[in-house]
Image (cartoon, rainbow over all chains, first blue to last red; front, side, top):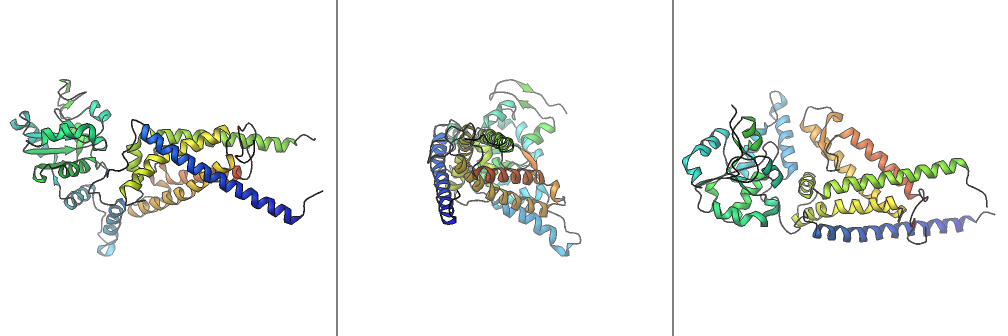
Length: 222
Length: 164
């Protein structure tokens, strides 16, 4: 014999309530466990730090491309080039740009050997070990506590500091530069190399493998 | 007591496979992100979800482990309907965000909509937007199906309110 409709509706309501409560329990326990896992994980994120200092909202970049494309009557309008975007972004952050030729000149400058010119690699340790500009200091600003003291020690007496990451879409060099500026490094000394390690390597310039001053070099190939 | 009809049995077996598939997928995708939290943080930032650094960090730090937790529940068959409902609650806004970002990228480029490809932060690297939308649609359909009471077979504790 089937139950009356009112009884079925009541059962349905209590079933829904049970599922909703179950979902709530999953959310509460899951969220608590998730934060505990992040806290105990050696790769966990520091929740209180701003990892993107001086960042420009990603949507603003997309809008800039779109606006440029639809402006000017739409006849000869072209989207902003990547180089124009990077230059505009660096200007907005009050950071100096250093192109490949300037970076190469600084690399060959005798002051580089005396640490008056310093190269800062803003990528992570794995990328750094796989290859970096010879003599560059590793500064993964997402793990700032591990590197900041050492990098500041070499940056303070330097006359010129070049910060780079992978190049292309990578903004880590900009964040690292802003981070160093906020840590007390004078802005006038700081420059960002937007082409980054990819451009350096693509042009066959020397690359150091492993740790800094490891002596393992892949020499200039072009 | 009569045995369940073969069609019902097949449907239940399929539900269990779907539960395991979803659970395994969630654990895999969650772990990929949890092991590379900085990369995930950068991807989350692309969605412009939060202006507060703490909120952005919290999303990037907790979401991967939360996915692993939900995946483990589905795989083991614990609180299945609740987990499926939570999964649906995560997939709906995530799919809307992915769609919004894809539309912005589509507007900013001359690419056809289905040719738009980007790393959406799902743990699978760069994906074509149309593939991603279909995949998410299927996952949401499975989540709805599981939340209606399917997949009880081989569940450790299907429901928290009663022994499964």
